[in-house]
Image 1 (cartoon, each protein chain N blue to C red):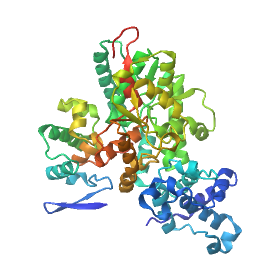
Image 2 (spheres, rainbow over the protein chains, first blue to last red):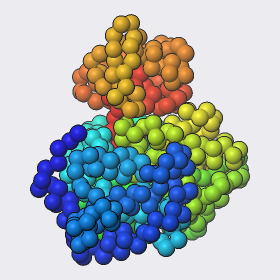
Image 3 (cartoon, chains in turn purple, orange):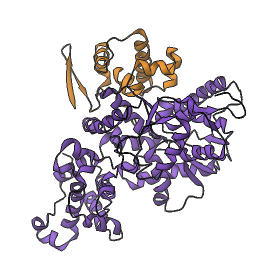
Image 4 (cartoon, rainbow over the protein chains, first blue to last red):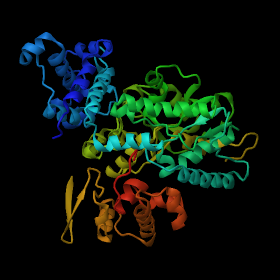
Amino acid sequence: MKNIDIQAKEKALDLLRDKSDTKLITHMNACVRCGLCADSCMYYLTFKEAKYIPAAKVAAVSSLYRRYCTFAGKVAPSLVNAKELNEEYAAEMVDLLFGSCTVCGRCVKHCSIGVDIAYVVKKGREMLATMDMVPATLQATVDAAINTGNNMAIPVEEFTDTIKWLEGDLIDEMENPEARIPLDEYDKELFYTLNPREPKFFPLSISAMAKVFYAAKASWTLSTKYYDVTNYGFFNSNTAEATQIAKNLYDEVHKLRGKKLILGECGHGSRANRWEGPNYLKKSYDFETLTAVELIGDYIRKGTITLDKSLNNEVFTIHDPCNLVRNGGMFKEIRFVVNSAVENLVEMNPYGNDNYCCGGGGGMLAMSEYNEGRLKTGKIKADQILATGAKVVITPCHNCVDQLLQLNHTYKMGVKIVTIAEIVADAIVKNNKNKTI
Amino acid sequence: MAQFELDGKVFEVDGDGFLTTPEMWNEQVAISFAKSDGIEELSDKHWAVVKVIRKNFEEKGNAPMIRTICQETGLRLKEIYELFPLGPARGACRVAGLPKPDGCV
């Protein structure tokens, strides 16, 4: 068991002692442990153990608050269920708050009084990060982003070679030498971003988005240095690291003088940059920040691109990424784009704001330590997908894509998993010509 | 950390089933990992992908870009996804004995 440094422990407890964090104090103490949240949590539904009930995760943090920040907890801890922060307790917190919660926020919507349980969990994670107790694999992903500019440590030269290779294919496919994937260009309308797993292993979504931009005659660029839309600092909850990662992207948009930051298909990355970014940097962004889904939605509404649904004629379903839908407001926009691009959409049950997490959220996919639980809880999603009878699952989040790929294999679902850019690119009709691209 | 034994040697894997000591990798490990992923027999194409990944790892210490795998094996992207149903990371890199790559894979 890892020894806790006394000073680090005090710094972690200071997060609870901070009276200016009124949200934490209110929400943490408002939970009356009624247990209504139990059935909303995929960990409780899968394992049926009381420790996985979201309220118990709140209690993991509030027990410390009572012990160190209240009179009763200081003098008679056992009477008020106040707990000592020691090595054993901290190790349990790691398993509970990192290893058994995807911070999907479904419990928040099911809470009768709206306790932001995910916020409390993230505060607990922040305490653990302060004590240097983030699971090693998750921390490695954050370190890679801080040290190299992207979470897979892809060298600039290898990234550039990959993009040039994809551009060559795009030129061949469009039969037009002017088809481009611009790199490091200044003063473009759109500064586009990627999840590093796209250039590293799954580049078809880059080609698809490039086709959409080509059809829209968009003014766009990628940066070769900071193109990573992810921010795993949002998940390890180390605020200094999350701020550094958000700042790198913010500064790069400025450097290239991009007009709009377009967030590639990534749930937490969209949230961390669009909604949390200004909080991290403590200033409003002076450029517009949009998700790729909204940009494509705009193109469709304005007639910038024309889609032919009959080109996507299988049965489709949508997996709603928690950070884009429940926590990001993209429910209607995703439906608008998908219904414009496919003929036959069957929704899961439940779906939209009440949808279940894929099981890979909250940094879970990066944490090998908790692989087993991730695949077991993912069965809920696998069953949901199978019940739709769909052959293709669309999801605008690369993290979800990867979890769904593994669920597809584990539970022998026999479906295809695609991003929104991919189905839109497949449905594009070349402007003014009845020819598809 | 879980362990498994193959031909009298003990191997350790992480929670995702990736080798924790990539130096211990051999072709028997590759065959065993592939079987657990539902690949009954490794074809020449599978081995070509595995060799490119191994070579890159031994020279540069990380997994190659998918572009490198395609260009050095002459295989198309879609073929690689078909050869390794779990994809280049969880599929091919694991069979090639690499540690799990960071990030959303």
